[in-house]
Length: 303
Ligand SMILES: Nc1nc2c(ncn2[C@@H]2O[C@H](COP(=O)(O)OP(=O)(O)OP(=O)(O)O)[C@@H](O)[C@H]2O)c(=O)[nH]1
Ligand SMILES: [Mg+2]
Image 1 (cartoon, rainbow, N blue to C red):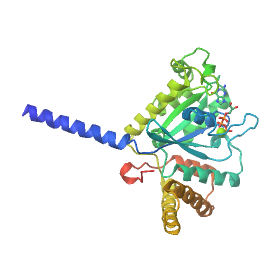
Image 2: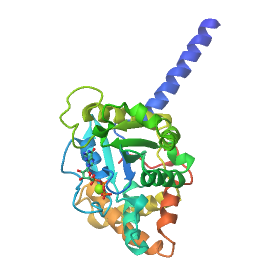
Image 3: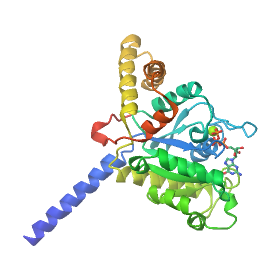
Image 4: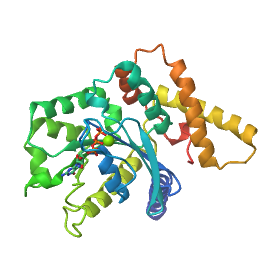
């Protein structure tokens, strides 16, 4: 009896493990990661660092706000399709509502049916009131549910000046609190000075590999699901409807990937009209980051 109990226990354990594996780390499953943070924090270049390329997302040191529109790019890293969604500085922007609307709608359609991970991009720098504001703002926008999917990514790691990143976080109560809300998940890169560091903990290569491990683990811990809410779901429904329309219209003349791209564009135009009555900026962002999460069973996957 003891033996068969043990066997049953092991079978259950294996099944559970397998379930976690199947749901969480299906290699064919795309992982969608959205980069969020203040303007000039290094979101775009961090995207390039993660992809190990310097030309995916554009950055311009001479302008105040370099990224004007959300841009998504997918690359296969170690057999896994990683999509990064770069955003403009949503958290500190004074852009008028009307200008912001299409940007947010683009972000929602690029993330639909929802991101697996939010990367909160913050600079390593001496603490200022200004920085504190950004941290507090992020905390108010993120619901506890959204924090389950969030990781802090520090840029300008060179400015640690020999301090360990753990010490840097500990030194600051608000930062510490933010990191704790993100389940203790954080990494540090330097988009300028650590590209050529080949070894050691403080090199981009090491930190990016660790970051992707952290995200994989987080996805697994979240049961393989991604963050979603009503707006993201609505966007996805519309995209799927547009794909169906295009499939009939074009009868296999274009690839699935191209079809989804075109469908997203059409969906965006419709959503802009549909959501035009909604008081945008704050409500969009708040709604995007709040509400509930669906597990894999409720979600559409496979692209
Ligand atoms: N030294 C150093 N400079 C960096 C680092 N990351 C970004 N920069 C510089 O900071 C500036 C802004 O970087 P971006 O990646 O464009 O910042 P962003 O967050 O995308 O900014 P917006 O698109 O305006 O929201 C650029 O001039 C970068 O070269 C870093 O880790 N170290
Ligand atoms: Mg940018």
